Length: 430
Ligand code: IMP
View 1 (cartoon, protein in one colour):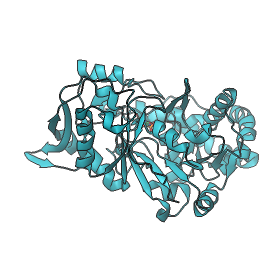
View 2 (cartoon, helix red, strand yellow):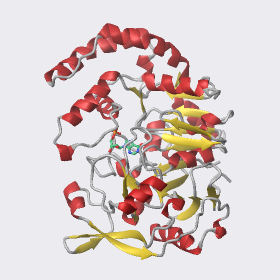
View 3 (cartoon, protein in one colour):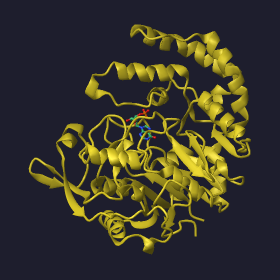
């Protein structure tokens, strides 16, 4: 059985949650491998709406195992709240259904303060616009070998020892820049019940996932954020602190790279971005407002209005290369109803030359002007369309053009937020 991976091809918020939810219905195992509660997936079905930040979407199927991999950074309080919310809604959350890597790093409250502090120390146009969830500072401690892992968090003595050694250093840093410091005793008291709550979930997930793949189980890897927010392949420094690409999976889950098979790239039919950083195809005004309203383009985690732009095939081709995309899902096509003409960016003009890749230097990227092709739009409501051939001709021509330019076959087209508003062209678990 081949594994399936879902990755965002843009700056996140491509609608991956909905596709994960759809594929999770078929999967035995759903694995998250990077990021933390900076992510937010909204899942709608049977008239209910859930916003998930840490727990994979397979949680809604009674038979699916959900894994939080070693490449994640986990805020135990946020995990506790999410488990409590799911439990309250009648969703089963016992440790047979969710497992957390013993090697995943922990986000403590001081990481969130550091996140705010680092942002506040930057000049206005240098701010990344983080989600303020402590993601960057937790990964910083991981790479500087000062971090705390889940295996330490759930162990009373190791937890106390880590904080006793580390907190004076953190407090010194916070005090230097006038930020509130943290007390050892308060942290120990606050986290004692959380340690007990999380302990049964913490396992060697690498071994479990590896064995399940070898047993022929259907495994789904769920990427958070998107390729352009990748620490290595995104628009650095306006990125997140992890690798949301398919290449990140082996390292961040502890399985073999040869176990990554089908890779589904999820793209909106247009582009959005939240936070700072250059966005070549961005546009503002009434048309952007129309798309923002029709597409409900506000962050799931922070509620910030998303910036809006045309679809950009330069970044789609970049995403194809760095992820090895085998299939494409085009999301939110219905939102483009009544927009005429539709534009697709096929290259960038820089210093009189046309290029078709993303420059590494951000100041070069800021000089790039998009080169567009135009296509006729469609005026029909497509939210009830179930079969691909029933889409209006112009809508089909538009998505087919995207697939042709990116040179990736279409797997799905989404025409509305509900689970049922998904047109499947090619199933991935066959
Ligand atoms: P951080 O991940 O909180 O450090 O934020 C870094 C950048 O990534 C900011 O521009 C955020 O807006 C962006 N970002 C992080 N998570 C998401 C997401 O799930 N969707 C979209 N943007 C995100």
